[in-house]
Length: 404
Image 1 (cartoon, helix red, strand yellow):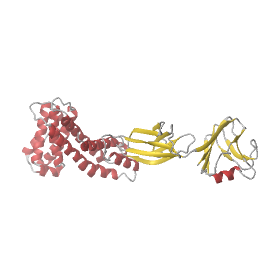
Image 2 (tube, rainbow, N blue to C red):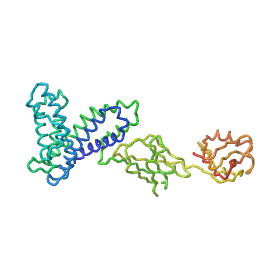
Image 3 (cartoon, rainbow, N blue to C red):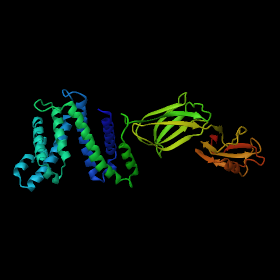
Image 4 (spheres, rainbow, N blue to C red):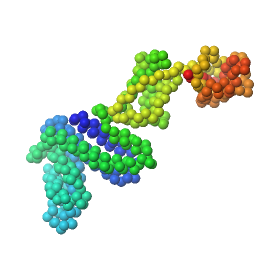
């Protein structure tokens, strides 16, 4: 399959998959399912053409049952429209050529049903100007002829004409063009647009699936390098991809010894990126869109964070070493695990807190600017020590991070 054709086929198939997975959203628009079904039918013919075009006309294995269903469905559509036209003009001869029910076509032998469909096609094509007033188009009649030809190849009927490889390739390209121009652009896209105001996530997902894929893959990739502020590669940084705005994890990888990471085989969509490493400030990037078949590159710089932590029994007091903390701190994060902790300043390593302190509940954290922190814990005014006390009901852990 030519690359231009293959990327359009990939896009159409991605759109079909997305629509099939969101039928509860589109069920309020009855015509939506009808158009999707028409696209599926055409793509069955396209895929069959591609099998013929990429292989040989002999020994090709095609889904005869599915192709027969497409052929008879198109024959019924063309036949009913032509029958309606014949009845409107009292043309009994024409009516007799196209008056077949679904059960009649389904009950025919496999070697006879294509001949009946061919006769319906010929009658509809000869009376197209009138039949188009009753529900069909020239494309419907053309598709019926294509379905008949492919069904005959699939049924390996030696008395019928064989579709050549060159013909198959041409027909595949024409039919894909019809799907895009007539069914997607003119119909399905417009129906999807009516849902934008009430179903924005569906609308975004639909148009992501509709993007033309520039390489022969529907998956996406994110790769890059993580460095510290001195351009030194950081190993074992955790890179996590979340579905945007949620905690739903899509992918997690680690950087190697050179600080490189590679998150591959991602479905297209909108994501949040999180880079984490102990001793460094977490880097977050939100609402990143990745298109199908695309590759994103990132160069991430992580600032060092001074982290102090420890464990305390109930009522115990610990001293937090802060002698090496410089003045370029932007944020201070206090955390408590398993038991509530009280952070405060005092004039001795084991001094009790005065009226100024910050309490952190078990399993939670509090973030403050340096100015807020100093004011709240009573640091300064002779209080040169920073302490923490377990004020909960059991053993617990504490952590304080100074982010630059």
